[in-house]
Image 1 (cartoon, rainbow, N blue to C red):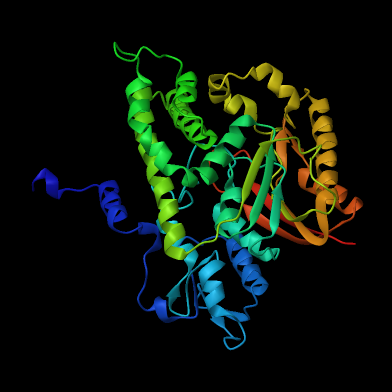
Image 2 (cartoon, rainbow, N blue to C red; image 1 turned 90 degrees about the vertical axis):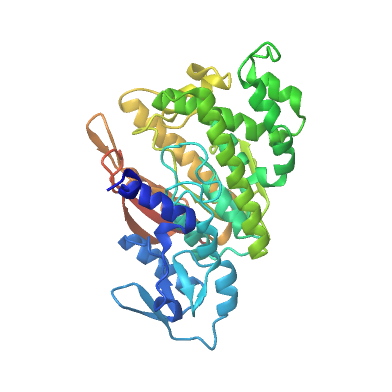
Length: 431
């Protein structure tokens, strides 16, 4: 048999990906059922979130067929079309029609089901699962025009999912690299034409030659455009190549061009899905800021979703040292500002707890009464001892006026995960 007729499993998967996103095949029989879960829903916590989301959206149901199908009991009273168009996170079809989320996740330039649209940009450790965030936004009752706040905005997952649902997002992070990620994922759709206009010149000047002696990439970008969003995009394109070179020893120029093209394709996907689904995007504002001293007014936000830093178990500064140095930051000085990185031994945990108390108090201050704060967190292991972060968080949050209304166990699978289990803690700020 000739070589071209012998295909590896990977080659077959790639071919299927080019014609249809393989993780979300549609069963014709399923298409006519009430509510059908997406094929990637596998874990108990996801089913719990799917059920909570359905209740929050006003759906009465009973679960059938091995927990894969939900039979709607109140079809006449629930606004099915509204739910289909805008909200659900864990369902691919509702009453025979595909959900918006099903269409959104097809726009994926990667082979990871969770990295659709611009979510994939930059390999940030400890990313949220975007599907979970979308569900939580629904579960805590946020609507178009409401404002969600995140004091540890990280890689920008909550920012992007809020934007897609028409929810306004305000986020801060102490890390300039995190702020950069969040901005490029949510702002680039507004400047794609400008990004494309300077693409060829950026690539041409990437490697110094007789006609292009420029060697300072960031200075080159500053000279080519005055648009901050375009600058942010091209800074991130470089940092992806810097990361590939540092982590995987890949050729810098090859990686830069490949990732640049993928970034552009992902931004174009974002624009296409926005127009196809007629999405009204939420406003996004992300800045460098300190969760211990938030520059927002009392009782000013409609919800909070965040995951505090696991710096005790994961050194975020060291993990991204190559990118931070490339941006020109003095990493040794930055460590004093990062929660969980300060101090050594027992004092490190004590400083972490002190910093988190300040952060939680700020969350309580700025959240409106009768609204919800969601904290995704797990116990860490530090110097061979388990740090009871979950218990500490619940105890302190309740001591300042929050009420714990839901505690969902979220098991993490994977050989290299520092955290083995997380908890999704949903608190309500009572009057």
